[in-house]
Image 1 (cartoon, rainbow, N blue to C red):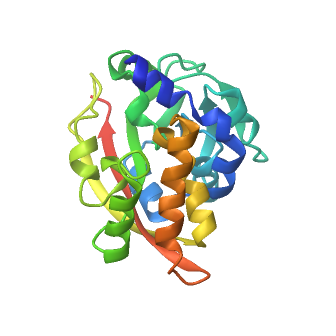
Image 2: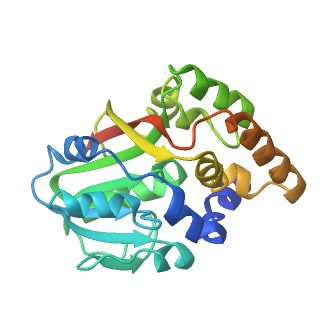
Length: 246
């Protein structure tokens, strides 16, 4: 991982509470599809953050263990019956063959796949599944496409848009895994202008901006959203990249 990526990936702890409050969960149909080929119900949420994906996994009946490297993010993950562990994709604190699926919500692109791939394969049971999930904005909708332009790539990047997420994630195939399958599932999040701005403020590219640039970016987004009604639904899809252990 480059120094820039390391700085970006380690930035979330500084906004952990806002991340927990304002980031969306994941479409349940997407989670079910990701898990469909798995040989059992034992699931590792890898790079679990504040538990956005963990919560959905628990709701669909998975037996979840959550692993996250950032202590501030992990401190926000409080789910009864869910085991939480400090660790990373490159160093997973679980025994060999102990899970049937590994899912990663908005985190797989941060993994050093040359190292993480064999480690993920190690903890997977035979026939196990690896899946990355991303909530992507549906930029077929005019105002969403305009929001992406106004916010710029630090706030709304290629992995965040329906038009570009597939091309941006299809190459995320670690050694020892099959070619990936991709699918999208309808999702949405009820927002106000301020809560959407607050969510965009937790994007890594925005978090690491100099303060003056960050304030200007968020002010520009806030001005654009001022024409929106008090509450509105942000149209999204949950995109899934699903791979199987070779």
